[in-house]
Image (cartoon, rainbow, N blue to C red; front, side, top):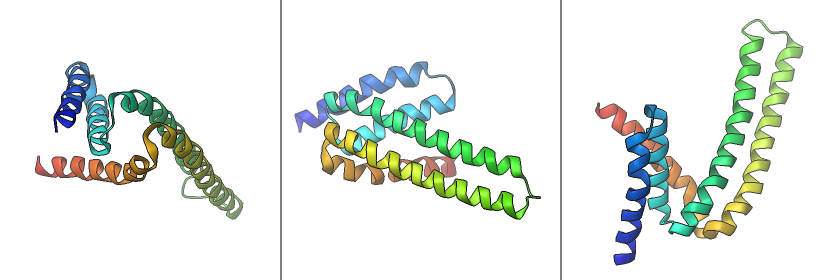
Length: 140
């Protein structure tokens, strides 16, 4: 029990300065997300330090793929030809495949850092955090 309390205190010590000095809601939400997921996965200090750079790199690459897809859809607009529509559908399939490939590669990296059990819990922790944020917004 003391170990868990120490980890929570350590996480607060790490996250509090981030929250205090963070600029904008995006930074605050990111700091909260890190603390929430770290706590849910019960990451040790060593795991926390090694996991987050890899996880953030993965998320940045996924965001870039999705941004590219959104921009492609925005460029085509409402009046697209059948050929342009076909290109968009193919790009979407390629994007989903690229995301899957990234997930496979980064899952292996993350598994070596946090282990398979914590990796298996990661998706649920992400979903729980999203739900928590939505509930917080609804309450306001």
